[in-house]
Amino acid sequence: MPRSRWRSLRAALCVAVCVSAAVASSLDESFLQSRDSRPPSAFTPSFRPIRRSLTRPRASVATAEPEAAVAAEQSDLPSVAKRQRVLSGIQPTGALHLGNYVGAIRQWVKNQDKYDSFFCAVDLHAITLPHTPSKLRQETLQATALYVACGIDPDRSSVFVQSHVPAHTELTWLLNCITPVGWLERMIQFKEKSRKLSAENIGVGLFGYPVLMASDILLYKAEVVPVGEDQVQHIELTRDVARRFNDLFCKRQRRKDVFVEPETLLVKEGARVMSLLDGTAKMSKSDPNEGSRINLLDTPETIQKKIKKCKTDPVQGLEYGNPDRPECTNLLTMLSAISDQPVDAILQQYGDLGWGAFKPVLTDALVEHLGPIQQRYRNLVSDPSYLQSILRQGAEKANAVASQTLSEAKDAMGYLSLDDVSSLRLESAEEGSGEREKGDISLLEIRVGRILEVERHPDADSLYVEKVDLGEGEPRTIVSGLVPYLSQEELQGRNVIVLCN
Image (cartoon, rainbow, N blue to C red; front, side, top):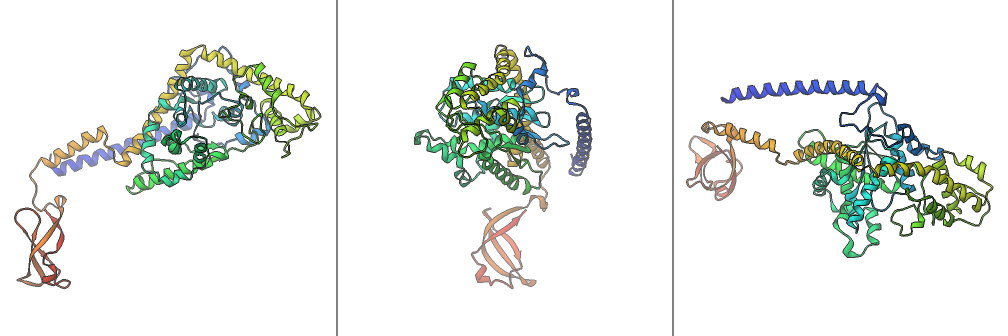
């Protein structure tokens, strides 16, 4: 095909693609507007819906999400006309406890209609520390089942396992290659965790897990990341990595940024649940003492025993916010969070009680609140095919989003795709279809040569005629205008850069 005709055809194709993209964009915008104008119940997801009951009516989900007044502020994420995307996850190491529920899962439940939500069990993070394979498998399944039992609706949110989306690890490698070591050496949590391990148990994964966390967020182009104060540094690193990637591979090529720099949404600590044995330490799965936490699947007898043995003080009466009585503040916070009552109302009702009378009140409230969650959990695990369908559907949606972002990142970095192979071969055939045109400027090459001889041009005093060895067997003759700058002796034997056809 003549070169001029090929160029015309290519221009026509570009116009057609642009028009198609504009139409598609318009249709997408109209669809989103029409979708957002309807109530949530009127929207049917495009992916395969799950319509199976957990033997309880849908309305019973509300029992899994009572909101304590003290926690109201921390879970009120900003409303937006177009739903932003949120990604959150918890490591499936150890049993999920009341702190995970109040501080994270319950917030997810409340806001799943406001955001395009992705919730995962981050099992890839779980292996950065020594673990037991069979236990990890069991705890991962348990965590995802509890997400749903606590009120996450798989028809409105995507629930999946991190390792079921291979793009997480692939993007992590790409970002590892552009993340300076110094950035990771400054991470506080690595220093804290590594101090608890022997040298042989500190792996590269523990050092680099902030990059994996950055990949988790950037893959889904999450615009908002709700975190506690201990995670702010990780979000800042994520922003730095996104900015560095965009600067290196997007702005320099004048292409659209691949990654969104996420905004940190600091979750206030009003309803932060602390250890039952130390009111100044956060309730944690890593605490070796089981008595330090209330697990979501603890039996009523276990809950009663843990509350009975929890640390208190000898002071008569209850008060909130006294720094000298952190355990009292913690137990009041727990009751407020699960009973949907402000602390002031609780103090008005129970403020004069001693610990012997108050602990049974807290125990009964915990048992009553966790009971429905535990029942839904039992229903889920008794129906493995349903639970499997939830995780498969979540992974399918997550893979669709993540693979698109990964493809954009690899394209920006210059990776060869299968589509590239086809187009590059066609270009090669086009270029090689005709004879090389002498003097065609598109075929110029840059070479380094050595000047063998220098003479004055016979017809122009300001020009030299030079014989240059370019490694072709015979030297080439070149004319230059260097007379005003260098003498013949200075040019003799010099290396020069030459444009050759």
